[in-house]
Image (cartoon, rainbow, N blue to C red; front, side, top):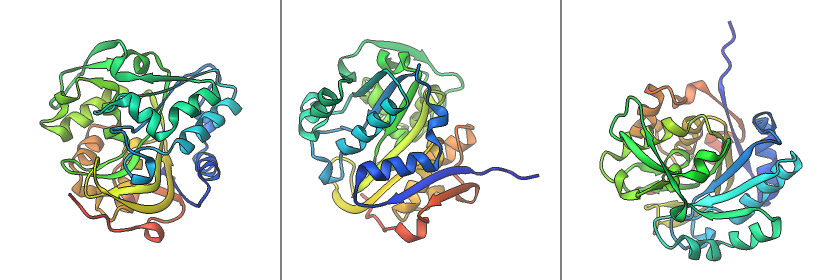
Length: 277
């Protein structure tokens, strides 16, 4: 019996649009997108800093995804984020406001959105949470995090990026690993693609760390697998990241690198040892 492995693509290059296009092609992303989908593209704009700092998602990656969706004849596309700082200012600094105007798609500050209270079954620590209505109403979330070290969770990639759709953020600050898993459990069926902006990553810290030039895009359908590969690319053993172990135990995805088929570049070929917090 042949067991198909979870696929994660690593693409190296200098042109974000071509890198995104290639990564989506490798993982056959078109299969999970319907023209009738209500798409939420969820970047990481945690604070108002340029993407060159390694802290926020590159707007060129977002624009490439919008063009991919338009080519698939998707009509309802929203870019939405709720950062921990001034999200509207972040929209200006990263250039995403200009992108959404040019592409004629909606841009939503999720911190100002209506929320829906969601109860979490079999919760590890987070029994209920207020989720932005834009996220709830979407049929597909494309998760577009940044490749970063986190001072508490060790790494912050796809799964932790989902914190941008909830209010208040402070609810997550204790038992963070367990709560990352709880939050992911209620959104896992909506998050159909994860595209990690690794053009420039950040070591040491998620909001004021030092930039690390990587020139990569990592993409996959399984957010646990994508985060595990991302951790390995930063020189870290995914088994040491508690929320990844818990997520696999919860059945949210695969964290064991031996069960993940890495396509494109190999982890070994692109790996850099990121400094921890």
